[in-house]
Amino acid sequence: MIKMFFYKKRITLKGSMRKRIIKLSDIIDTLNEPDVEDWILLTLYVSPSRKMKSELYLQKALFIASRHLGRLKDILEFRPYRLGPYSEVLKTKLEVLENSNAITINERKELVLTKEGEERIKHRKSAFSKEEIEYIKNIANFVNALDEEELLLYTYVIYGAYEKSDVFNELLKKRVELAIGMLKKGLISTSLAAKLAGLTLPEFIKLLKQKGIKPYRADENDLRPI
Image 1 (cartoon, rainbow, N blue to C red):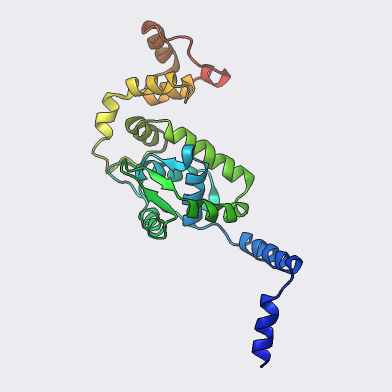
Image 2 (cartoon, rainbow, N blue to C red; image 1 turned 90 degrees about the horizontal axis):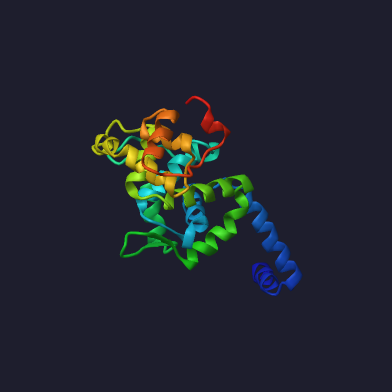
């Protein structure tokens, strides 16, 4: 009898009391650290059109983020793979999210955030700092703007992890062309493009002038020795 009375009282809560309970559950939820699934959903949520080009792009985006965000680094481990750093945990969590309809993979192999996934990450966004969200957004935008070879070259040159790669040497043959392409897209500075090209800054600037590529992006950091 007591249990039945308690049950009836719960389902007849007034609106104000219900709102308090919901707010309390939100507060409790934000105390939980974001897990791998949360990071995946956040990355898709802040990506252009709520999607990423492929699993490869998501792997590289979260790898780059893990090198700068301590909380992400603590829960994701990446190992060298033929196409750069790769996380088995990330792969497994992607499958979980797909099976739960939080994400879907379309005919172009793009990872797309579903309505269910969007609602889920909206509920969890407060578990992330503003700085973390902004950083993930910047990385997602940057990565999605690259083609696959540009993405791999950037990852290998800046972060390494090419020990098991069977494409790294081929990319090195194209590194100047790829670096110039990224520069022309306005995605990187002249100094970074020179590094990706494997040239000193003066050598790279001379090459740009020879090719008639101007104006090139430069800032005060570009004028310092690499």
